[in-house]
Length: 421
Image 1: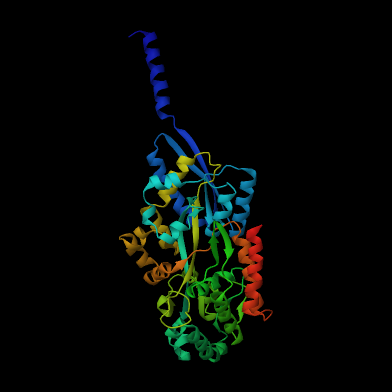
Image 2 (image 1 turned 120 degrees about the vertical axis):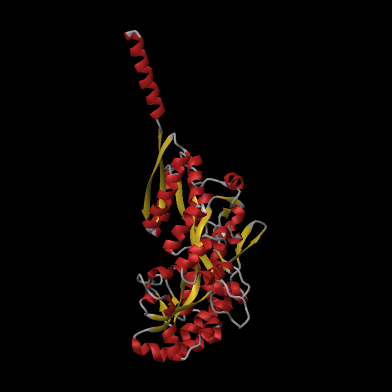
C-alpha cells in the first residue's frame, strides 16, 4: 500500500467519522407558570424521549418559569415583540386573548392528525379551542369542592350532608360557630379575593344560568336574571348570618392549618398538608351546595393548557414534544406527584394510570365526579374585564352597597359595553 493511498484512506475515515458523529443541535425555548418543579419533571422526561426519536439531533430546552401574573405579562410582551418561543403554558381564561392576538399557532391540523383528542373529556376539548379552532391542549385540570374537618363537624353536631344544600349550609354555620369560634377557628370560608366570581359561577350554573350567551356570532351578558340573582343572594345570605368574606387568600393553606372548619376550595388544597398527614381527618363533597335537595350540583374547572406560539422556530419539534408531554405514560406521574386531575379519559378511567392516581391522590374518585359536573370559564379576550366587573358586583353585595339584583344589573351594563367595544 502506497504512502499516498494510506494518507487518502486515513483522511477518508476521518471525514466519514466526523460526518457520522455530526449532530444538529436544536435549542427549544419556553415560558411556563410556576411552580417550576412540575415543569422540570415533565419536560426532562419528554425531552429524553424526543431525543431518542431523533438520534441525528441533540435537542435541549431553555425555558423560564414565572409567577402566575408575571406569566401573562410576559406572554403579552412576547406577543408585542414577536419574540420566538416554542412552547408556553396558558391559563384557560387567557386562550382567547392570545389566540386572537395572533400569538398562538392554530394547531387544528396537527390535533386532527394526532388522533388522540377523542380521549379527552368534552369540556376540556372545548376549552382548548377558540373560535372553533385548536390553539392549545388542556393538559390538566382541577375542581372546586367542599372540604370539612370531621372532628369539628362531629363536635358541633353537624351532619356533613347538611353542607350539600343552601339551607343546610346556613344551619351548619349556626351550629359550628359557637363551637369553633371558642377554639379560634372560623366556621366557614367565603372568598372575597380577586377570583370571587369563580366561586359564584357554580351557583349560577346549577340554577340554569350562564355567564354569557351567543347570538348571531356575538357575545352578550347572560348572568343578569333569576339564576344570577338567586346565586348572588345565597352569597349575601352567608354574610348576613355572620360568615366573613376573606379578602386574603392562601389557596387552601388556611384550611390545611385548620383555621376554617369548612372551605370550598380547589383540589390543589390536598398539596397544602404536611407529608404524612392522615387524610381520614377531613371529608370532601364533590361540588357546591345546591338550592334544594335532589338538584344537580356544579363546580368550576381550571388548569393549564399547552400551546405553541406562532413565532416558534421549531414548530414540528414543539408539537412532537407537546404530544410526548401529554402521553399518559409521561404525564400520569406528574399528575400523581403534584395532585392534578386528568383531562384525559384514558388516564382517569384506565389502568395502570387510574390506579396510580387512586393510590397517590386522596379522594380521587370523588374529585373526578366533580370534574364530570364542572365547567370552564369563557375564554374570549374580554373575559378578564368581565370577571372584574363581576368581582365588583359581588363585593358590593358583600358590603351592603347594592342588592344582588342591582349589582348584577349594573355589572351587566358594564359587560355589555365591554363586549360591544
